[in-house]
Length: 235
Image 1: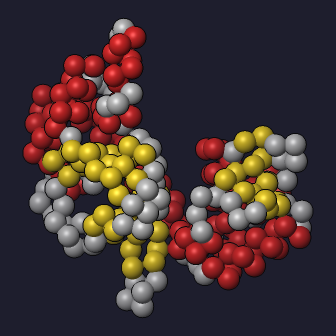
Image 2: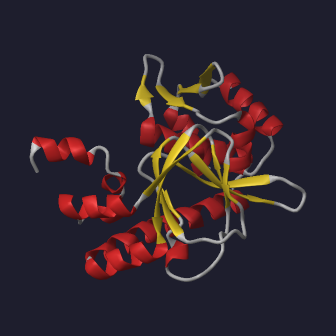
Image 3: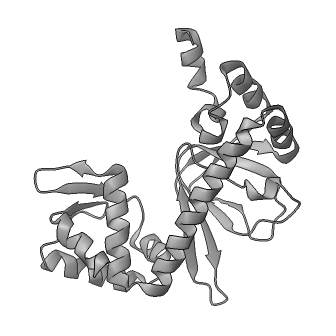
């Protein structure tokens, strides 16, 4: 791929998504021609549970939360998606409605690929089916662990497990330990971990008093003792 193609590739939504990894530059351009780009302000609800579903969504920039709402109005965040992540793939294989709600956590750009166009791409590029199966199996494994954590682990264990995942994924080495950025409000963290904002704050304060972590404002946590944090999960 020459320099010009590399530069153009940066502007193609499909190039950021693993399921399209087998496509060459010309095929990615074709996918891009089928895609509709949309911008959403922070707090915009993209769709609600029960709405008609018919697109593959690709996060171009920003973040999106997928969540359920209980009868008493409590949110349970199921997934948080960032640049290059995709969602809505299950609805592409059969006519059904959205199973979750989706909301922009910040100003967000999405690329939408209609169901029928996606089906035609799979027919023309059978190797994409393997990539889709791999992505879906990874999500199933994550979902099983997520459900197990909610059902079997204490809130402290859930917080520890979540921080360890963040540290592994995007932690930055700092003089005191590993710094992780928390781009969620305390309420959103609570909604993700299946607890209350007050409990999250109390447990984080407890971990600070034990010397396991420290906080820098509302958005940064320093993991001071990763081994002790991991021990909380493995007890």
